[in-house]
Length: 279
Ligand code: PDD
Image (cartoon, rainbow, N blue to C red; front, top):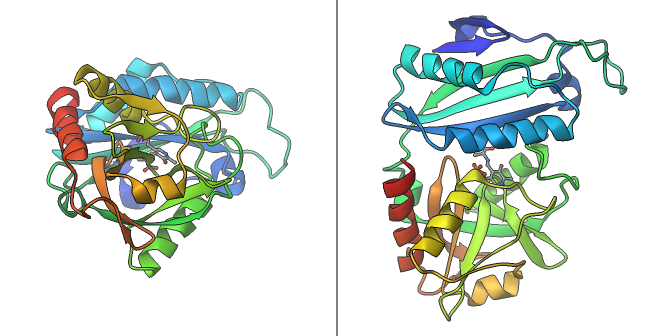
């Protein structure tokens, strides 16, 4: 694989960052994951808008223009001949002696990018549907900033696997915030789609924004409000969205079947619409 590290393209074996990278020492870095279908980026502009916001919230400079970042994405997709999968981009505050204070403003951000080929449209999980468990959401209070501080989501997903499930839904004060790396939704018995509104409690998903728009266009009633685990257990359907999963049905929560425990009509329709319109 050819990767991009701090201005250079090269084989992944040579893609190395400094031990002084602030991303490595302090998780002082932000990232974006964009989906690739048919060699093309899905919703790149949305990811770029969120990237600019994450950088701003952390007082980090935009290291190059969106057009230049797009050119690197495109070159990596071409050089690696990726038809379907994802591309990861990380921007850290740069290299500096270990100090809790931010380094001087002229510290050069370090950009890293690599591709991962994998099936998205025909993903086995999308066909089967997900089992999720619930876990307390003990992440920090700025989940709207897409930082690489991913230890707890990683632990949560691992705990889900150990429990025989596929993912975890995180819960704060009885209400679901989101999944370990996706936004969470239920469909109520009266057919309304419910998902938590935007705040610093959740990541402002790019797929979420697109799917909400498409759902409303298609005539679904959508409410942005927090929902409890109890409501999820009584729901007709549940699902998640993210750049790498698109829309995936959730079949059970904490071992309890949602609706009839099969992929529901709303989530399968939304997946179709998303693929039709966004890809
Ligand atoms: N994760 N919530 C969290 C906590 C996430 O990490 C993600 C994305 C989402 C969905 O956002 P989007 O639709 O913009 O992908 C919601 C990416 C895919 C990841 O970390 O791999």
